Length: 491
Image (tube, rainbow, N blue to C red; front, side, top):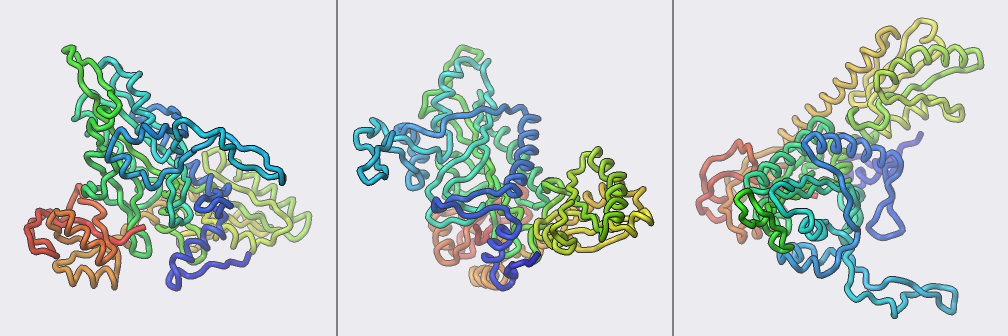
């Protein structure tokens, strides 16, 4: 299989697109800004979805589904929310088409809607309008709901997985009797995201709080997980929002507490999307294609049989049957490639591009000697093992690959993390090295805007576990600063 992948060093953006194309993860749609997610890409999303769904349910959440269309008037009820999303909304104005004389179709002008409908950019408004009917007493609280859905945000500049006009995601929306419960929920779900990113994606992240200008529209506080990509740019990988009582007041969601006092509920929302697949690609992959952590790989082990004649074919297949079933019964996701119209070398190259963590090659000599050749995708190393040890060896290797990918990404992030004592040093680090830069900031939006305009770097977060929580002076203004914050250029 001929690989056509630009090197990361030559053109990182093109490399990213080449990996997606060659690994058959996704492609551009006829609709500008949208994507077709191909089976391999969707299988990765399904594995992500399955693990996250399990984690959500283990923390007491249930799945529900709310409409794709939102009445326009709903968005105007929370001022900051509508301001944040107004320029990204797709609007439905008519309900039908009609035929034209030339055999085409046109919008039927008589079908204009009395109230336009917004195609869901996020669901806070429609969900909080619904919650008003669900909540009367403190006994109905908390409401812990998650939704798996698609959303549309009218992006002008798009990139597969990272930023598309339509994307898949989950959005959690919870209602609580007290502020402390809602804040606890916000931080709990942030920890779920951190655990998922690090334990399943093998992608180290920094947890923190966004500045006021970077908050979700309508939130009191936005928490995030921030990851570092191989090119030195940051990626916001997930967010969890404490919404206070803003949406409850906008949609009049109240409850009667144990003392018969009527109060507004407290709210949270939280979400991750198919953007995680982009983060997965840019965290681990190389110039030979996709690299996947075993916990999320659609295929964890591929078996490639090799034979030259029918007798060898019979011998090899019989031998593979002796251990293939053992691997599958242990819950390992195994693919046996029996295609006869492709040579083994072509298959090896294909599975390297597709990022399958382990490849087992089996020929007639292996069958005779009761051996197997096992190749790792992450280190590209091979070893010959006894067939009696195949299950133990494969299980250990999958664990080791998962750990190695995380440790490699963590070491890279550490090498791409710097401290700037002055504004000149800050700008030099961004241009020469990139990555995360800790620096003092005076806490004002004016200084934050100046830095963004002059360097294209933003405050990614104020880390929760800040290793540089010491007072100092803002690198730009010289005004007092309580602690260093985390800057980076980002996707």
